[in-house]
Figure 1 (spheres, rainbow, N blue to C red):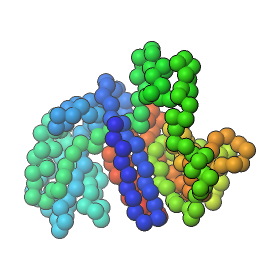
Figure 2: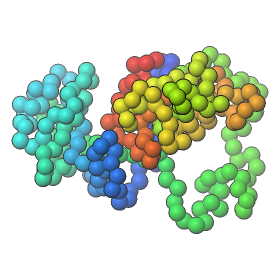
Figure 3: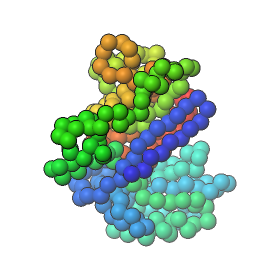
Figure 4: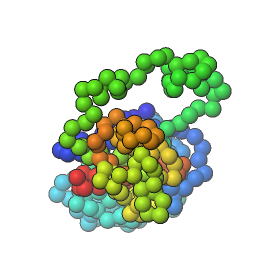
Length: 265
């Protein structure tokens, strides 16, 4: 499991990545998901796609002059950060091609466009009894009372002062008819639409449920007589969708989501 965060003044961008292996015949963003071994690690990645970061002072043309167009083509032009995407020509060994690109003078990094998962629940029949892994107070065997973060004790001190805007990179937020639809996540002064990088849409509608859960944990409308409580009662949420309905999201989408969040406060 990998936990990551990007913190800048006035914003905390949170994302949770869990990389798992397994045979997949699915597509993401219209591209087939492939399983392989990248530098000793089992990964899933988008077929034929290479993410490239250019060194400072170099341009996309420098890359094309070094690499040529025999083995790959540019399918996303370099942005202001020198980030671009290549598509390998058919019948290329993708990982070998990436190593070639990575060694070019103008390239800072090159890697597959890997796919991450939000979470995985194993199919072991006794997993629900492993309360020390996933403690919900389930019975049997019964959760341990007070095995928690002591939120009420914290709220005695503060329920949150000056609002912090939290960019949640996840599966989105509940939306119906183009409007916020969850009774605990529907205050338009605190919950804001970011962007849907999974479907390239302006409204990050949650079709998985994980983003709803995470946003609610952080900042659900609290002491309102409805639903659940959020940890920080005054936090603002910028919902950014990077996971699809199956809980998969590419590194390209995560990268774009982080930059979008920072650019939007």
